[in-house]
Length: 300
Image 1 (cartoon, rainbow, N blue to C red):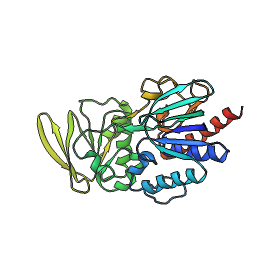
Image 2 (image 1 turned 180 degrees about the vertical axis):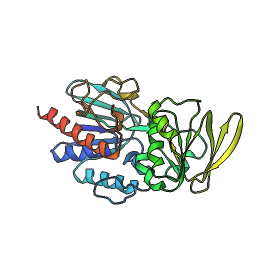
Image 3 (image 1 turned 180 degrees about the horizontal axis):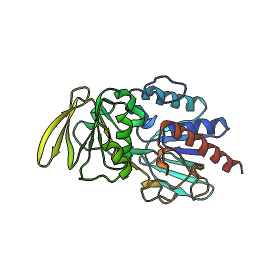
Image 4 (image 1 turned 90 degrees about the vertical axis):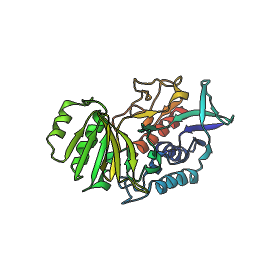
């Protein structure tokens, strides 16, 4: 029996583990793929306090090392269901392993929706990006494209237009879903070009992206560029947790900055909860808030 079980070993989950262990609680962190989460995809991280520059892999390793040094136990497995019996939370994993805890923190993150084209995963971090705020500075003075038609894509294009020599904004429809105000801002920029009724069919380049192939009006053509920012939304994987926390219309845990759910003893942290800003720093902030809330619950 653990005091706190944390599902998800990204920045939110590992920060929660560190805080909970320092409060004297026994902690288990269960991660289904790689400890460190999506930050490990980034070859360089330059927007995390105290680091001028660090690789995402190194940062993830340090978060894990810190949590384990404080006493956290870790398991590499996928959680498939949760049973809430009031004072005991039972976590059932894909391997058949079963763990019990007195409190539970869900920190499973949210994955960016991908284009689904060949070599996308291979080129992720080598020209293919999913966060302009995180990676846009690496493409200063270069030619990039943003794929998407909502506010996130429009905001990414605005941000990149301030840094990059050229920004292509590619959308599969003939009009944008995002705010007209943002569209007008982009129309006024000389270095932004709209490519509508178009989709990306191929990624070009060997070790790094150097171009894309676009299908538009029944024909295909190539564009040379150094960076592609995919901004077609995110999806949290909360299927196993839908009965223990209310979800909003987009499928995120419907929780505010207090990281509470509607179920006593169950908390949520990081990108899987409803929020406006999803960054590394907001994830670790959630981890500390959720851990302290879980400790207060147990101490009561």
